[in-house]
Length: 151
Image (cartoon, rainbow, N blue to C red; front, top):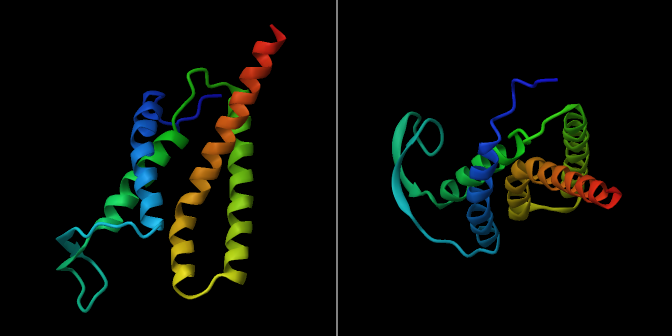
């Protein structure tokens, strides 16, 4: 079954190349190793006015945007041999990732407070894609290994 929502396979290679450095930047950000990069940015809402330019630190955006784009490229790129079995693994991995993500979110709501909760919510933006990618690729790896062992 052909899915019109998946990206071409070459996007996966681009995604992995972008994911590694952006993931490292994200880990550094979580460890409070940050750089201050001030720039004027257009703000539609926030601060004191709406639809205005503000001068702010854009390091958050420099970390989050490539991480999000790379995760989406890796997650939604076709496999070289995309078939119904791969589609089933993709669907199962997505459902599994959503269950785990919301279980972690529930635990966070119960046990994490104040500024740490804000950090948790930022991380939660990426967890579904990260969990999906890990599980999907792990299942593919296990299946390829089993196929080699059977030959």
